[in-house]
Amino acid sequence: MSAALAVLAPGLNVAVQDLGRPGYQAIGVPKGGALDPIMLRLANWLVGNADGEGALEMRFSGPAFEVRVGPVRIAVTGDGVEIEMLPSAGERYSAYRSLTLLPEQQFRVVIKGSAPCYLAVAGGFDIPPALGSLSTLAVCGLGGFHGRALQVGDVLPLRLSEPADEGESTLRPAKLPPLKAVRIIIGPQADRFTTEGLATFLSEAFTVSHLSDRMGLRLDGPRLEHSAGFDLISDGNAHGAIQVPGTGHPIVLLADRGTTGGYPKIATVITADLPVIGRMAPGGQIRFEVVTQAEAVAALQAQDALLASIKASIHRYRNPNETLARALAEENIISGVTRADGSG
Image: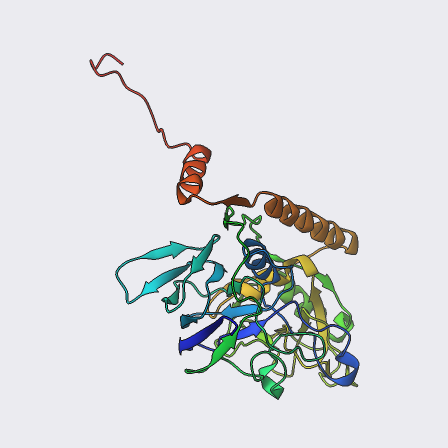
């Protein structure tokens, strides 16, 4: 009998995601996949999986599970996420480390922020791929666990009956460079906007709407003026394309976007900044900055180099005291020195 995670509480729209299913947009299926592929990768690396293994994507409210059979090795990544053992006795484990749980142990994922968080299990989930991917496209019931978010009573089978005997892993949280503005390349239909509309788009701040979802980040704020109407012959929608419908309010297209659309696209978010867009929550502020194609490529190369250095820094240990000692050694925990006799 294989190991499994039984769902005690489903959380809010928690579903399996991986790096998506490229190559099917021509038949109306978007690539989909994780809103924050960086955090998905980190979670997988911590439990010894390949980059794109399927993991649980969570936001706002985390799920609770019971380990069936096992043992099971897990890891969570993301902003403000922890593992709490049940029944609750204050025993919590931080993100960015693996944790091996025994049969019948219960735990829940505590999420304090709003950005996507990920829970990976060693070996991955033993569910059949759809069009080569485990990503859940809930709008049409494709992929993931029965094509939907988790429900109470679900039992998620795992590929491994028990994890490899290689100890636990930990890494320092990813410190990505802060962005003053989300970087974009203008077009492909910027000529469908007035000079004033384009200037407004590039100079003003926008607010993420509560109507945003995995299909698109809807932005409230100043209205962008079209120069020649807002209806076009439908063409392909790229991940990160910024459509502007008749309301004049931009929509940044995300992982589960429609594959075609007939609204003018004023700009496209560069690939390196798509995880930033994926982390944004209702009420968040966003500005845009134009870069060249060469700068976009350089930004992606820099991000890849940073991720490679993070992967190389993963520390594996068998004694939990090892990771504590290592963390203390890396911190400057002395703020000053004074003499006991008060002379200095």
